[in-house]
Image 1 (cartoon, rainbow, N blue to C red):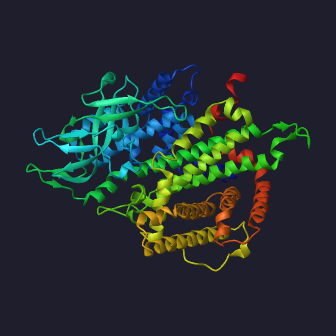
Image 2 (cartoon, helix red, strand yellow):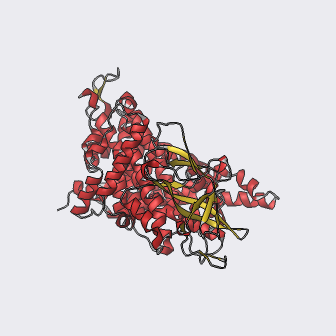
Image 3 (cartoon, rainbow, N blue to C red):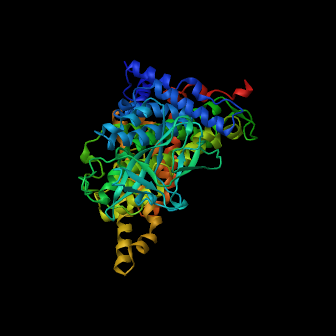
Length: 598
């Protein structure tokens, strides 16, 4: 018979891969990767990360298999994230943003085989040249240009000035080979033909830089320790085969053809490499939240305080600490449910992404046009992870930031991914625009309620509140923008005056999606899962109390009601905190005491 503990473990880890694959994942990120030797200089630290990346890539299943199997790739990246956040970032870039475009857009291009094999064999490390330093929203129209050279049949890639430099990139390490996926605007026949990807060797064996490539190292940073640099391409010549053309072509007569439509559709298609990134980021957010919750519990359990109200009282008897520990565990389980949701294959018609003819209109960033809900869940998951990791660090007292670096490193990772992988604010704004315009979006229907006499322990009540808030904010946003346009304001002015409401509207949509995921998980998961997901739902509603009140979804007094429900749930969960954390199966170094005290 399956016990609650077994059920929780199965929920956390999902359908486990076979024993051989599990062993390869653990071999790829062994326990030694969970610590970093002391006394390393910044270049030493970068070299260590690349050495670990090489070892991981050689020990893990083949790259093609991983990219075709999202749960397996995410399992590998989750382990890397909790072991060594810079390793996770480098590994994500290598697999999804360097190899991914070659396999996706260069499919059938036999000429890309040498570059692909160099990345698969870890003879070269992958990097991404997409964002440009001088303009916001640069993804929509990169100033880095690719022009066809009929004399050679290849292309010339150029960044016109320093403001068009590609940054950030992981290219500063001077001794290592690098292969880049370069996003550039293809200009041909006097017209912009869309944003395409080019596979370009940036550093050869020993780190040698080819003609026309200029790499400018950035100052060292401690937030997420990567060998950041800006890259300028000064009339860099690449062969025709470097163009990951995805079916497009330039004929012998110079005629350009793209079977996937005009430039706008090509932009969305070229950004279609994002879903594997988002799935990995959501999964990593869940993993480091689990690790942080486990660390906070390890810090708190058995610890006494000398507070004058009750000297020698256990720390977790205090409601603030107890709710911090249990709230972190609840967030970890909630994000684990979201990660399982996003790694489950979906039929094409269930994505909000673009087909061959393009997708939803893009105002701020291309991401919502690729897959609106997945982009939105990336934004929500990283925001939740950032909040939870930060709370775990604070509630771990001085040891949380001074005794071990792990929580600081997790916080740096979650902080970085507020912008990396698609800027969260821009994702929210584009989601809200789609909601206001009903662009592939149907608002929740009005419901009579709340159901179950408003009992906050009921998932039906959470969903009613979330759906009502989503519908009301959407209706109000759409009404305000429409009124501004009728009054003669241009689109920028109409939207610029409503960005705060747009953010609340998209956040309400994310809350509804997450609560639906939690409701489904509660219905199919082990019995012990219900109360912990309920606590997260109550925490989420409490954080949205201002919006719920402002929109008239709930009456005054809701904070007291939510507080009472949260306390009841915490009383139910407190005796099981250790069991909830044990299901995470965290590697021993994660929750070990500070080594220097051993």
